[in-house]
Image (tube, rainbow over the protein chains, first blue to last red):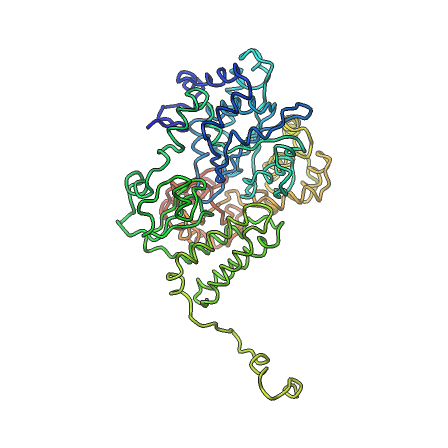
Length: 420
Length: 160
């Protein structure tokens, strides 16, 4: 099985090594073709976004207007903050030039002269590693104005790094653009979509780091080849059980699996006894009522306290909600409070229904998908592990203080008399 | 106390401005420079940043308060960021967090009296394959347990 994004080549992050292994040949090949041809090949390859939404990349590019009356922008999303995911980090460290080459091809395809690589602020080290690679590429003439000479084209493009500052929401594409513009990272209402109205009101395409790193391989080896080999570094459709037992070395202490989250903490969890036969691809996971997300798999053994885990997940989304939409801002806090109550042992069975109700009222009622990301784990964890959660709550609703007024409503004494 | 950028940083700001078509877009990197120079983002820092970038102080404040990595109060020489998100939690992240809290007798967001250490409970830092982890200033320390963490803290203390 050939690895596309992280091949087993020593020192591939060094520009000479990358060149010796066929680096920067795809971009030359691409620049000899028309932009429509490139977009067409990426469309046919079936490449989908690796940031979580799995949208068809070529199709996204084709939304960019053809006219050149406004500047166009490309944003590369390396905000990678979904709990359980650390894939883009590996690319910055081990294969940054393939990412740069992918950016050069993409920028050409959509005719963007400026590309911003948005990297989360906590990745200080990986920002430095990527900036080193980028300055080497500039020096070698692959990026910037020198490109005209190097490739003999009119087209050239600049690549800049923009460092985030610790906000999960900035991985949402419209929030990311606001962040680059120097504003609070609030998601924007869509439509208008970024291809019409993006950075500073200009046509903009936003792609994930891993997505773009695949592009040079599609150009070099052809879309037919790419469409056959599937998606991830392990072939798409690898059994989840193989992934856990064969590739990851199994569960420490040979314990039973209680719960698996297949694609970052916002994806609906699966029960341990449910994972037999589940394949790691978009269709199979969908059939089991979950999604591939970032494909960052988290496995929990039988000793795990699921209530605490869910409370921690809820805390994360409560912390990261940007506060723009009421259902998400308030709802995430309510869910956390209820879950903390259950953790303390003060929860009732009514709280479980209440959690699902709050989650349902967030889902679909917010500007961006953080609403769903916060609602899904709560909703699906509570419904799929109802038996587990019911053992942790009392069967009756308990009032912390006996309510005198309510308890007297049906008595013969009117309120006025009680006061006296 | 008035805040002014050093000559060197003013040069850096000039270069930063070339990356963007508007001045405001440079606010995040300029705030990072200010934080590096001043240690934290004070009211005076925001006033200076706003005047350099033709923004209102309120807009700068809006940015500072939105992003968790801009510190609105002085932090320790070593800023300890302990991840307690799910992957780390499953591998003992809370044990580390509680251990640091007890050892340094500070709470989340707290600063030790000698101003050496400050503590922050942080969200997923993308080290799930090597959990549990803590970050100290800009560096990641991974695959930790209490003993290893103690060693790290001791070595930092003995440096001073």
